Image 1 (spheres, rainbow, N blue to C red):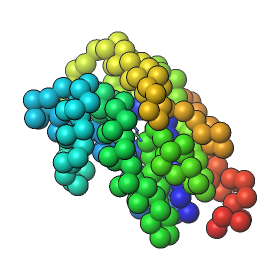
Image 2: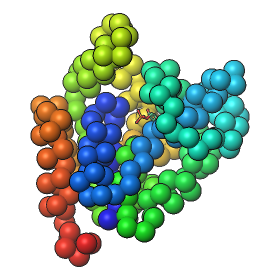
Image 3: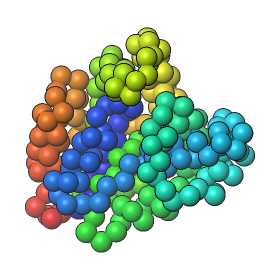
Image 4: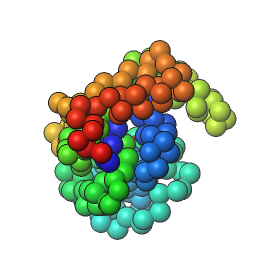
Length: 211
Ligand code: C5P
């Protein structure tokens, strides 16, 4: 079974995707890490993430390690959102993601374009969202736990800018697939959001035929 989990930054999609992978015993790929790795590689090379040439160079020489804690930083997230707008970068990362999705037994992938581009044939597609305020609050709390004292308004502005860039770009914009189901986590605890996600996967149309 292939499960596609898409949605904006800090919507809870990563936590939900990980929990679904555990629940169904499937491998999981956080595709945001690929774009973050490209973004960080550009910065480390002294390049500009907004430059298609710099970003493509980094995408073509991407190391396979995605466990660097630096990938979770705000700087990596911002650079990722800039490099991910270049169609060449998306093309360079396409095969790796499709290969992961189509492995025998299935997989769970989370990102922005899993249900629309990477795995349009996925058995279950969730579009996880939450209000910008709730997402900014979550990100603010997370940064606080990491010891970073960043003003809430700055986090909210960053979330809004990222939403705008991810939705407005012409290459694989953030968009809910026509056959995806919406899961709004604004008023849900983590456990409730995970339970709701599992229920939606279980209830998906034609589930018996897909198993
Ligand atoms: O999900 P995460 O916040 O780690 O993603 C970082 C950035 O990478 C996003 O803001 C988005 O621009 C980009 N991204 C993407 N397509 C994906 C996953 C992430 O464009 N499938």
